Image (tube, rainbow, N blue to C red; front, side, top):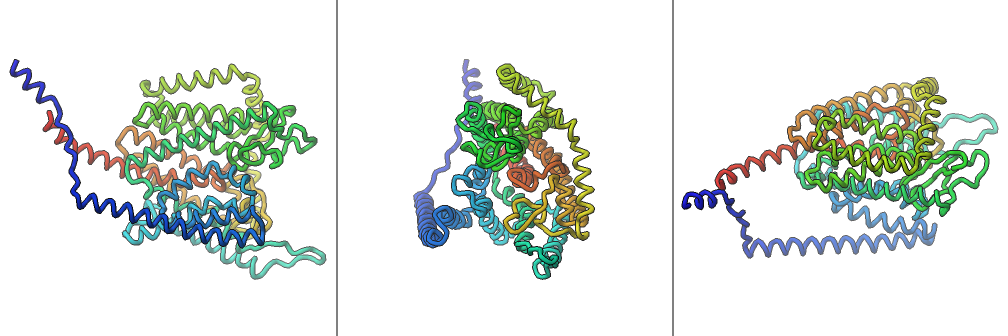
Length: 544
């Protein structure tokens, strides 16, 4: 009996010792908090006063629609520079809702760059912090050479092609009007779109400090996907029930064109002509194809969290976000989403090995099948229409033929081996001058920076993809490895995808580099977890 009691006592673990904080330490913490509050209050007051003053001037000159963004911009830029970590989180949260916000604030061309009010000051703050702490800014080092080469090629195009067009414009014929453009401005905006978000790798890397930050980031993405998909579904219901008319009352070609006049509460331009079986919904983004690529990229985030999160509650929530993505891929009318979302899901299942992990795959597979099965049974005609539209489009215009046509056309029309000028085929730079519509990515890069720039960019994304694969292979923790595998597949897919131009526009233009930063941080988190386990091991042995 005595032996049994001794054995029971030995099995009880010792309670964790809570470190006592001295009075001096408590006072120091209070002083630190008080100082931080004063700094925040002072900065907010100063930026708000400055913003209101400038906003008043803008209001008198231009009007209220320009004054409000001016005030908000000054406050956001000031706070983002001071608090770069919080600014990066705000940047990621704002991204999927930006297409809705800008139309409520007046649809000014300046508002198209609103998200950069978070990003650029935060980037400057992180760069200064890296210099101060002597930390590397280019991460990983293996991409350094290819990145420098790409930067040199792009700057050559900016200086000699855009600069030449600015200071030595081509002559025009008799009676022809000189085009109103600013080639240097066009080039700067094109450069920003082409390479401006690469530092997000570094920003994301330093944003994530430990596993807690990583889980917060991954769960935040799932919540954002759920909210956006919910708004996308509401948008479809509003159009279906006639609350929003869409383009159904228009005639001729207008029935098939996305227009801002048909906007339905969220997002921007849309097409809704059910009598012609034509639906293109923008969700919360500016244009329908941006929404489609948000659904595609969201598949990777939801899958990764659904199969790797340590909490069963978050795995169930991720299942809900995956279901919402599948449903929106059907109702949005974008063929690219309808075909890529299920394909990406299957590829992730096979690559990460989860298709053989019955413990995780069966609950997710059964739950997803039930939700999608119910949706299909409830709307069989809608699903059949979308599938018929998809295969009809593939038969009428095979993607491979379209891509080859774009390559051939731009190979013939590009001016020099270093391109026709940065921004010349960038839609978001059209405020600085006329731009050419090129609907595939690498032909667009070919037209802007020439064959030299294309080879430089391919070298860069190849070095990035190789580094991503090596990072994925180095991770030993099974849950982190699933997430790393999902991020690697996303990076691999976007690096060499030339159909359409997702790397040129939101959200993929941001998510691609964010995913790279997340992936390169995972080995550090994996190491931290191992060290914590090793620290706890002696305590566990002692307790036993």
